[in-house]
Image 1 (tube, chains in turn green, orange):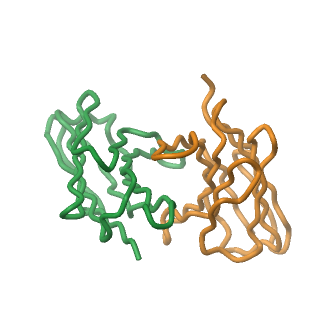
Image 2 (cartoon, rainbow over the protein chains, first blue to last red; image 1 turned 45 degrees about the vertical axis):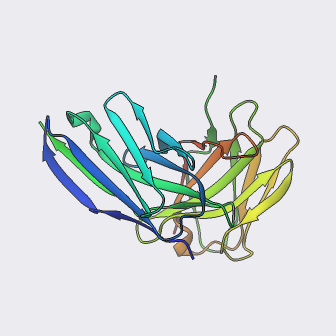
Image 3 (cartoon, rainbow over the protein chains, first blue to last red; image 1 turned 90 degrees about the horizontal axis):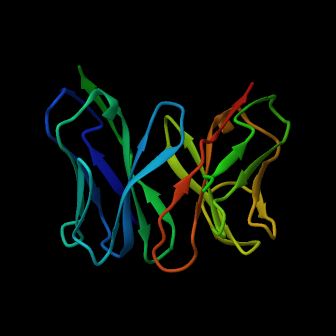
Length: 112
Length: 113
């Protein structure tokens, strides 16, 4: 059974720091992995989508990598800003079940 | 291009009642998925509809049901509401086939008293 874990559960950093969020999964049979941000009480905003055949994707200050062999994806945020404060979720599309499975999320707070 | 819309945004119901939530996908998207989000369980997959057919289903009791119309709009119904059904219900739409990207709506906050 596919399990998706995100560590740390919460993170607080000063503005300007570069930071890395982690997403681990137990089964490498995936179609893709997607990173989202969620503001309190709101829906999810898609940040980056990495297909199974890709190693990384970049958008602005965000860079996501995927290593299926180690069951790991990382989201790198450069020069963090208070506006980056949110919960970050990873989700993967399982090849076997064709279902999206979400991680537990990392709650990020960037201090001004 | 309009995003995914969900109505209503907020809902308060009493135990034992039933509720219907609505989701309109992005134009051209034919797949609609529903999720339940609670503080304790996180985001859990309810079901997915494509071309008016349920294509995939999560591990929820039969009180949770859904349907999709020919214009790809989807509704989710919960009967005999329980306190534990209080949650944020999210809908996501995507293109079909392959390895699509999901786009989420703002959610419906359901409170059961």
